[in-house]
Image 1 (cartoon, helix red, strand yellow):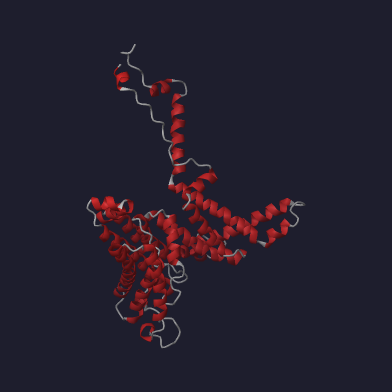
Image 2 (cartoon, rainbow, N blue to C red; image 1 turned 90 degrees about the vertical axis):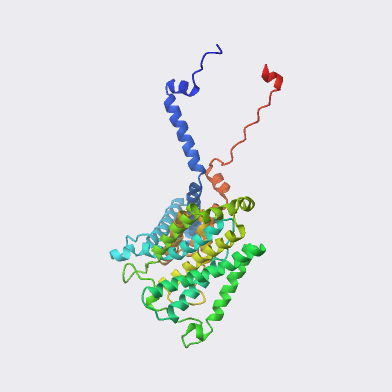
Amino acid sequence: MSDQKKTPRNNDDAAEPGGALKQAESRLQYALRDLAQSSWMITVLSIVVALVVGALLILATNPQVQATLGYFFARPADFFATSFEVIRDAYSALFRGAVYDWQAATPQRAIRPITETLVNAVPLILAGLGIAIGFRSGMLNIGGQGQIILGATCAAFIGYAFALPLGLHLLLALMGGVLGGAIWGGIAGVLKAKTGANEVIVTIMLNNIALYFLAWLLRQQWFVQTGSNQPIATPVEDSARLFGLLGTGFRLHAGIFIAIAATVFVWWLLERSTLGFEMRAIGENPEAARTAGVNVPKATALVLIIGGALCGLGGAAHLLGTEYRLAAGIAGTLGFDAITVALLGRSRPLGTFLAGLLFGGLRAGGVLMQAQTGTPIDIVLVLQSVIVLLIAAPPLVRAIFFLPSTERKKKPRRRQKPVQEAVR
């Protein structure tokens, strides 16, 4: 009868034999689907694919493996055994050079790899956070390289040109790095806010300007203060150097604490502050943010100023923590590696921090891998490139591992009944 209450279907399913088991399996399937569609799973699988690609390249460049291919059909077991040993030795050396060397003669040598990973990660984390702020705000800051150069330049000059007390000297040198990066990022920010200039083009051009500006400064005696014609500045004073944490034999310095503090600050800025909300709002929809009362030009300029300040801090930490002397190649490829760190970290503070540790480990471990196994260190660059390529193309990762798509199928719209039929 129509007036009888129908028992809910879920209760009927639960009452049936095995109904609870079916519901548990259904929940598990939904959980696995959500896990497969998560961005973190895509990141992990991208790293796995990069390691596989790296293994294939290691095999292709190894002379022992090439020799076994000459008689592969006669004794295929030699090829597979040699390939396994080569890959095992290469990745084992990579791990021992990045995390823990269980073959070291002393405990100090055994834990040195993880400290080298942290040392390499400090400037990558700081610069990556600066790039990530721009990505979260809908802006492509490609000028991390120039901002790092300006930050290192300002920090170095303050570090050797002034005689100041311990503590104060280091603080002023770090603040000089922050100011130098903020000015360089602010140029692009103000131009975009006032004139609508494309930040990608402006920041790329500023990279070149910073590079040649540093080359000019290193030829000026009033700047280098060395009395030599060599394009290199005098070392910074001991009072301006980041102090070591583990004594002699280790390069780990207090910059790791600065990187941790910067990660917490960026998280608070983006997730808990009003300015961070405005930054994310202009990244989602600038017109909607303007309608809601956000000062879009001001927020746009601040995004690149703060991002540049973090990149400049990364350059200052790199110089004051490990290099101690300003030279033309002080930045290396840090600015461009920071872009990949921000991409791998999904422009999230914690993700960027972990990505910086990963890339720092690849840098540290690649040296030992090349020294002990003869594997070209360029394999590390290939790993980084493949990771970023797959991060930028999630559908490719899903296709490789047969993961479900994130796009939900649209349900067919039900045909609307006429009003007369609905009344009946």
